[in-house]
Image (cartoon, rainbow, N blue to C red):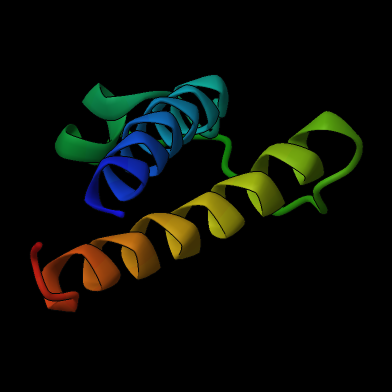
Length: 76
């Protein structure tokens, strides 16, 4: 059972990383740290951006649930 949970965790972590890195919002990390953001506006998510957002939320839930299962299931 633990090997299945480990495999799910590895696949989920890779997919979650790809989803997070595929999202591009704002002007990048430098602008977030320095606080220099000029033309910020709010827009609704559509198409691929909406799919990536929902996939990120779903994969993060699966990742956390799998981590809790792995931590609390008895070994053996």
